[in-house]
Length: 303
Length: 42
Image (cartoon, rainbow over the protein chains, first blue to last red):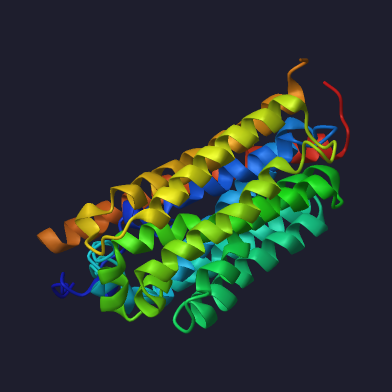
């Protein structure tokens, strides 16, 4: 057998850890969690194995999105410090393998969802994968600073898919959960993009702070937080959640608003001094986990 | 076997082992999905 060229990623089978890294496991955890909460918020739970499979399919679909995103953005990832060590820009894997893995995983997740749960949930899962890859990654992200706003819809699908997988139909509550994640995405990502904007600028991605400036981004963060807070509290007055959820959602959203106001009041353009932005970013992750947890607890505990 | 071949074989073995576990888990999952879908009670 001739000696292999070890610097050529195509010559070496990819390590399983790199294949796993393609799926962006950290992003997947948030997607799985919101999907699980959408499923657990239903009036009548499905059999455990069907619920488990539905969440597995959401996770696999999210993994497919991560792999296809990394396949398409390998060149951009190589230019950003935060992403340069990923398997594709670091040349530990060849791009074609990532493409095959992403397409295969996506198709498998949709088919399994259709067989195990229902085909409406499978269609929603397929739509969310296609939306993330074609509308967000390929179309919007490299072209417009509103990429996060519209692209956020892809990340908002899981609670809706979880609900539909369990019930087979739409309802007001999962649509509100979709709206909460959709409106939460811009403040969450723009807070991050404020203190890593040099990375985005280096890669030529038109994130809002790069294109419209830091002050404008801070204003937009605050403006998006207002409807997000309203959507978060809305299930209570609409009778879709109890007072425990209403009180917790109001407190959590109020803290979010205070942190967003601190970001709005911040004047620095030096990422090292953007403590308010870093706090908001960290809190935004906690906020979504806490809000969805309270929704499920409020739904199932006999208060 | 050269060191390069050993690296390739090691990765192939690891991937084959993981694939076997995943396929086994998938078969078991399909069995339980079938049980749940057909409404069998046991």
